[in-house]
Amino acid sequence: MREKRFYIYPVGVIKKSNNETFIEIYPEYKDALLNLEHYSHIIVLFWFDKNDIPEKREILQVHPRRHKGAPLSGVFATCSPVRPNLIGLTICKIDKIDKNIIKISDIDAFDNTPVLDIKPYIPKEHMLLEEEIKVPEWMK
Amino acid sequence: MREKRFYIYPVGVIKKSNNETFIEIYPEYKDALLNLEHYSHIIVLFWFDKNDIPEKREILQVHPRRHKGAPLSGVFATCSPVRPNLIGLTICKIDKIDKNIIKISDIDAFDNTPVLDIKPYIPKEHMLLEEEIKVPEWMK
Image (tube, rainbow over all chains, first blue to last red; front, side):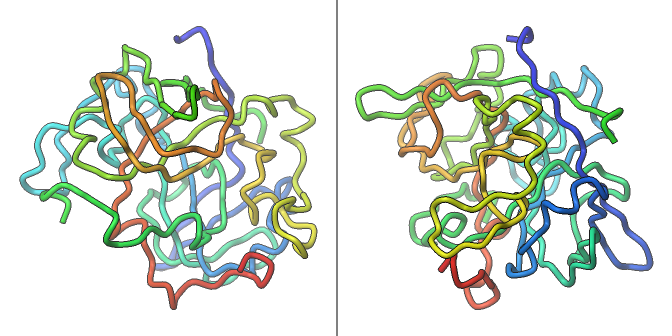
């Protein structure tokens, strides 16, 4: 299916300095932040740009490093930074929004990571009932 | 920043028939599903392909249609299907996985929507404490 592809343009970048973390939204996308300050948390989608080489995007199975006892797993069953489309997802707390700069709690991404999209965290869409959720033993 | 761009390749497609909903993962990505059956829920990232024209990707503010009383908002403060990068996100319950086909609970996306990525829903990463979350009045 490699004949079909879509283009993604970074809308900003993650900046880390002095133990603080920011999302710098590029000025041309600043208007897309209107009213975001009414939310406490955001879903940040970013691009694992360090892995953006064909060889890494072809990796379909990994040993999840952070979880002891985890067996070899398909990348769709992990949050691995190698995957066919290098989209990372983290939920962050908004500390402050100042013009095009969002100060956030820490994020599990490198300095200068390209940001693709931001969505508000909405309980009725993103929270599940704890008792409904099943995860494997090695993820508990 | 339009000089920088990344390529996204669909890894599958959403299929709806007879009131049932499936994610058909393309056979070449099937190995990426190993162990996914140990999870109950997935985060599905898809592409709002019907809006993939430059004019729609330039829209930065919308009136969220589904929420009465919602003011004009930046697309990053909404889940609007128009946004600079047309990534949609939905959390789905896995009903069954059969080879490269994931039967899911319904999904808020059209038949034949391209699927970009799948991640397991992991409470310690994706659940927040209800009392920590703030959303605006019009989203309650």
